[in-house]
Image (cartoon, rainbow, N blue to C red; front, side, top):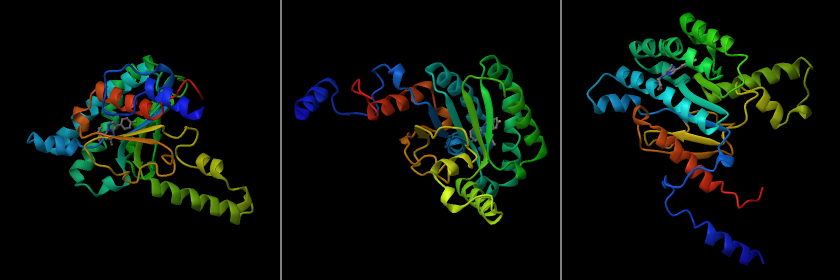
Length: 260
Ligand SMILES: Cc1cc(N2CCCCCC2)n2ncc(-c3ccc(F)cc3)c2n1
């Protein structure tokens, strides 16, 4: 019986021949609730065009607006964007200084639109090392959008997954030594609730651009069960159709035969 069912399903749902198909429409009932994106390839994009690296970052920032809008239209509930990692401090000072100005540049330009679209802004990362002007800008945006109930736009800013885990374990150790917590109480939910992503569901889909197939110390705990979709496209060249393709591939992998 199962064999016959399988055959029928295979007949109506041919095997994944080419996961890059972008001709079939998306299933509105199977949109990934949480998409995380490693926005990679900005420096390479600039190099290919004989421009300084910061031109790639500037171009990369322009892409965010279109992706946020498209994701929101498609019904994505949470969008996490990897903007700056704890490893990025090793970049030349001039580049870091430029990058640290991008949050305020982005927000001063885009916040009114985000507000209008009921988008809630959140930051995930270690704020202590950020310059005061950067902290001020992001805190203002978080505060001003805190009542919004639409898509949650989560910027990973000075984020490192191992930093996050070490910090969480230190805090847990302190609670145990203070007698506030006993090891028996520790479970996966408690750990998830003590991470910087607390309150967010794990990403259903991770997108990484520019051909790299690495996690680069990004959400190591949270991505345990996520689908990964890699593309050669450099982030400054990323288009709405690339997002659609990623979701289409996700749906093919997570296809539902009308069942649960
Ligand atoms: C450091 C940095 C770099 C940065 N890039 C532009 C996008 C490509 C990736 C690297 C460079 N972007 N783009 C947006 C932000 C941002 C951060 C927080 C926030 F609340 C609002 C916007 C940003 N931050």
